[in-house]
Image 1 (cartoon, one colour):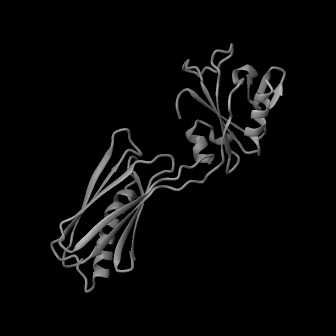
Image 2 (cartoon, helix red, strand yellow):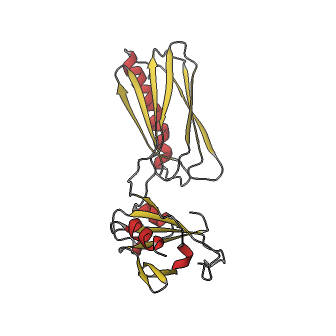
Image 3 (tube, helix red, strand yellow):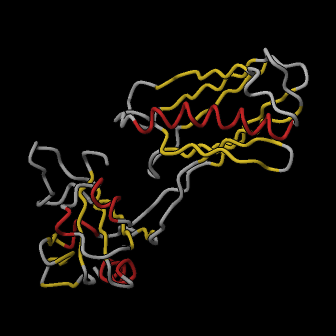
Length: 242
């Protein structure tokens, strides 16, 4: 979360007390800091991590080589990039294309799984599972986390009759989940619900009492996680009456 954003968690809708808006039991703000502001509501969404389906099809022969390159900025500011290679050997070449393609998917899954199991902190892949789809082999890669999009896959095959194609399904961002609150700076002990609505408002920082964080940065935006219904509507009603 940006340094100029302050996150708050509450279980009650806001109230107006004199000239102050009680945003939560622990936070209030002069009402004029929100005069004319539009409160934006985001409902809680569990989210889904992005995936990449890599399909191995056609006829692979012994000596063919397949490469899968993962490129990601999910876990580090510097882009992570690594290429994995599988050579079709006698042990991978089976009696049917289906079994061969599944064996190739299995071989790639094993390479990914070994690094996942190694517990590398900056590794961007959460799981890699091999299966078959009709006469093809399938490697399903799931990225780590639901807060960012940043998984890219590049595939290549030296085979004349075997093919490899990747299809990415982008991440659906989670919102209002316990992990989102923790990422926003909410203490774990304060997170008591499984799902929160999120209200975002921008402050008028020219008022006399802006929020200032511990490093002296003026807070310009408030992100309020609420486990009670209708927080955004209640806050907007108060703002409209100022």
